[in-house]
Length: 439
Image 1 (tube, rainbow, N blue to C red):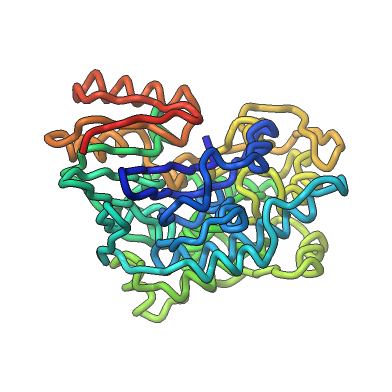
Image 2 (image 1 turned 90 degrees about the vertical axis):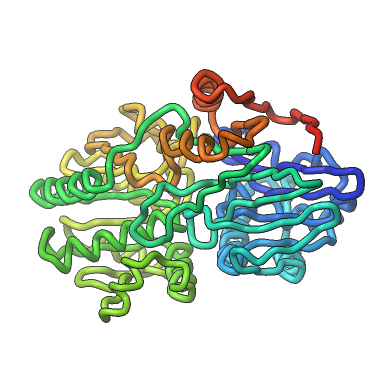
């Protein structure tokens, strides 16, 4: 599912696309310490599609083990990348309990990676050996890109993570209509999302119900994009009087740092968001909103009586400050846990989504009496119809589709749908698979 890292190789050039961290189940995370299945010293360049850890988390390890080529991404991805990598290192240091365990990278490796990392604009073509490359807007998170790679007149497209367009903040995912080979993420390749308007109404009702019950609304959210989208919509609900003014905490240093980067890249926003900003509205400032950056500020949230809303990472409840709040409030029947992110198999978030009555947090069993709700419409990934349309746009030119970055159920469903409805060869590669195609 995670740990995105793909090697594209021609006779003269070795190009890596993403170098992510394995996350979720322990056997998956164990792969992070393993040697790369290639020699990092031989890689000519690395393309980074976006700043989520499952796409960037092993870049410092790659550099540490000898990669000295250029790293290319958009400027926003570079800035978010540094923020994420430093935070990931902090988390890894906390999690190491055995003195024999080693960090997969150190801060100096992050610094070395950043020295090799170049930020580009969308539609700013460049070349690496045999490959001509162009980044298009994926609409997934700030700076996310689709990598178009041309070799001998054949176009190979790596989707990275596509966006669930339209979104409140960012521009729509750009269309590609002439791909010959497509490597596409299929996180939700077997299901449909609810509508945008429906999700906002549901959010409003969940907040109102939690306020009426006198409870705490906990929202585990990925620090990049999901938190910023949520704040955008809460800003509208509060300022237009659709929900009462209550304390709303963003309890994540990473999310707060990401907000600051978002504020530096307003040129990446869609027309609606730019219009709101031009009218004088600060998208990330409204009555009741509080950013709790320090540990001391986070602890003081406990002193604020319900009702209140707490938005904190991590999105899958695998770490971060949200698990402290879950330990405190999951046993409270007046409170609600709202899942708005994808929950990978093996995570606490997935257990809660699947209806677990007890979960293990910090080594202790916590009884789940709080309401657990989920809003799929907040996903930053497209559903099966959005993915299908992205493939269909290149129907006339596509020779093969590779469905990646998902659980087997999703990739297998999606590849079968592409074969059945479009008649295009489609496969779901397994970890370590390799393929050849003529260009």
